[in-house]
Length: 394
Ligand SMILES: Nc1nc2c(ncn2[C@@H]2O[C@H](COP(=O)(O)OP(=O)(O)OP(=O)(O)O)[C@@H](O)[C@H]2O)c(=O)[nH]1
Image (cartoon, rainbow, N blue to C red; front, side, top):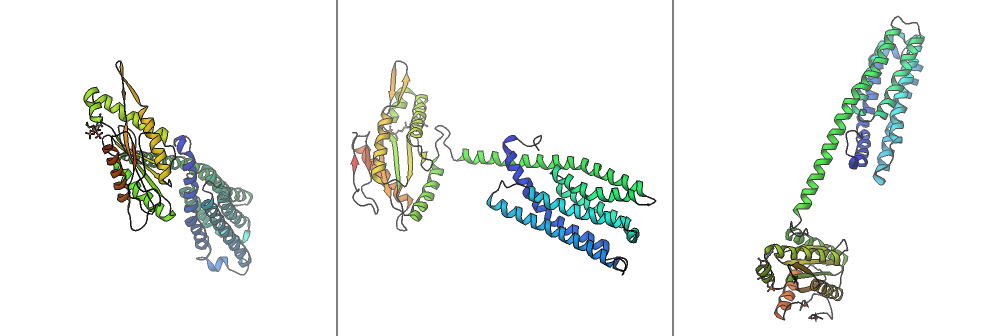
């Protein structure tokens, strides 16, 4: 596997391999039983003659019990896999080996039993069919294939040498050749299986990366507006379910046009990148969403935060923005921002748009009152005691 799968995908590929082997084992069990039935029932008079009936019933029972054990092993593996996706595959392997050993034992006994001599050829053909089926389904795992083929082929190929049969040597040679040949062919199938799996994982990873890129603002690498809007709805619904608050801070850099006009757009871009760094440093809860929602406008969505906490955090952020300083020749470019805060306890009567509208109104108020300050929404839904609160540039 390691030769065809990128190292990072190996744990995932291993899980997938055993899941596939388990899925392929179901038709394998049916095929196994069907081949035994096709061997004995068309020759009913022969196999169920008085002298052979007891042995036939015994072998049929062994085959049926082995099939049942294999089915149980698949079932146990799947049940374990559900609770622990990394569960080990030994139980699956046990089922495969028991069923092939059951067949190997019965076919070996049949060859040894003088009463069944006329059935040797059809038994070996049936065994060859099962080996081909095993190759088709178990080829991706070398371990599974070997522990299927050897118990199946070895007993008949050894026992046929022990009896006085005119084609003993050629039967044995065929068995050994089949063992080697099937194992060799399985290598090609294994390679194709893992190369296909690797391509699928690479494709999935690329499409995940693309999807992730699609949510980002390329300049600041913060989330973009489309993602932010979706996230607002998602968090709104979550907060409604959890009956908790949802806070929002919108931030607009002050007089940014002047920065661009005086220092140029490249420095303006630097400011936006520094702003992004400051946001990422200030907000490190994974549940918070940081986004650039306009040219020099940013937003931070803060699930579970009450308005008091959001206002404090917003004011701390405002002070951090004041500290941003970008070198420009002999002078430094400094920034300030105005911030609007709103908090909502989501219900069916309000919406995420309402939350945004309130924060935007507060931001407008902060600009109107002179910039570089934090204002909170004048009206807050279901939040007692905090309406209309504001903090100036303290
Ligand atoms: N460098 C740079 N500038 C941008 C970008 N996006 C928007 N801007 C600029 O941001 C400025 C925003 O100007 P205004 O909307 O007038 O706001 P302002 O000058 O910040 O004034 P107030 O918001 O009222 O404090 C404009 O000059 C835009 O060109 C960007 O990606 N890079």
